[in-house]
Image 1 (tube, rainbow, N blue to C red):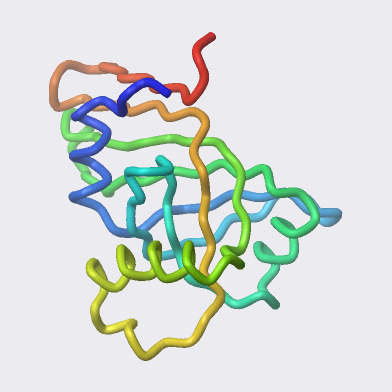
Image 2: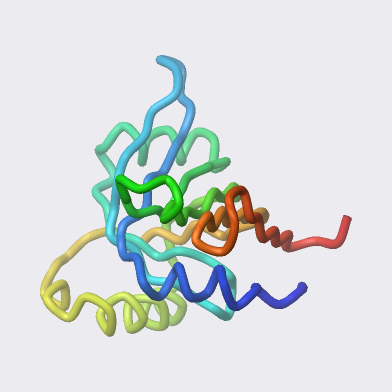
Length: 145
């Protein structure tokens, strides 16, 4: 697996909310969640109830897409990440403890929250950074093309 570019890692460190997109029988759906980045698996960790529409959709079809971005008004300041991959509930207790430690380090106020732990493994990422130059893109893929 190729290393994740520093510009993408910086965005993931500076932002804390993802938008997750799924597809179900009713059509496309999006949700937002706080996330922690897992560098070992190149994944985003988030918490969420099993009875939400996006959780139900992921259980039926784990393919996901999403983005992480701020909302600058000035177009020259746009910085955002688009991603695609797959998501699942972390069932293994050792793995759950490992990724929850990452999540709790970032969001210590969630230590007493009881919730399923989700992992979105990322297969493709594209960073757009207009701060460098309008339309500057940085790409990453888990597998070599």
